[in-house]
Amino acid sequence: MVDTEQRLVGIVTVDDVIDVLQQEATEDIYTLGGVQSGGDNYFQTNLVVVARKRVVWLLLLLVTNTATAVVIQNQEAILEQVVALTFFIPLLIDAGGNVGAQSSTVVIRGLSTQEIRSKRVVSVIGREASAGAILGLMLGTVVTVWAYFLQGNWGVALSVGISLFAISILASVSGSALPFLFRRFGLDPALMSAPFITTAVDVLGVFIYLSVARLILQL
Image (cartoon, rainbow, N blue to C red):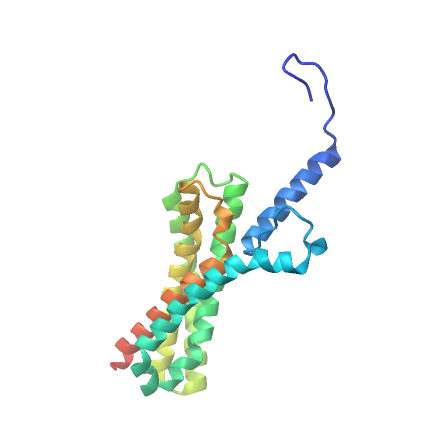
C-alpha cells in the first residue's frame, strides 16, 4: 500500500483480505435471511439485541401476511362449498415461495459478482420466467395427479395444478425482478430477501388459486 507520492506506507496481507471478504459475505447472508447483523459477532451478541435486530423484518412480514388472510376471507364462500380446496393452500404458497427464493438468490448472486451486469434486465427476467414455466409445468402435472389421488375430484385437482403453474411463473418473475428494482432505487439488492419475496408471492398465490378454482368449479 502506497501514498500519493508512491511511498510504501503499509502492507495488506492475504489474511486481511480474507477477513474483509468474510465480513462482507457474512453481512450479505444475514441480509438475505432478513437479519440485521450490525457488524457484531452474532454468537457473542446479547439475545435481547439479537431479537431487536430481527423484529423489524418479522413485523413487516407479519403485517404483509395479513393480506393473505384478507384474500381468504373474501373467498370464504367458495371454501365453504369445497372444503378440499383449503388442504392445498399451504402446498401452493410454499412451492411458490421456494421458486421465488431460488430466482432471487440467482439474481442477487449474479449482481454481487457482476456476472449479469452486462446483460439486459429483461432477458434475465425472461429467462427466469421461462424456467418458472418449465418448473410449473413439471410440478403442476405431478401435483394434479397427487391431488386427484387424495380427493378424487378432477375439478379440485386441475385447480391445484393450473394454479401451481401460474404461481411458479409469478414467483420466478417476482424473485428475479425485485432485486433489479431495489438496485434501480440505489438500495442493496440483498434486501429483497427470500422471506420478503415469499410473503409477497403468498398473497398473490392464494388469490390466483381461489380465482382459478372458482372459474373451473363454476362457483
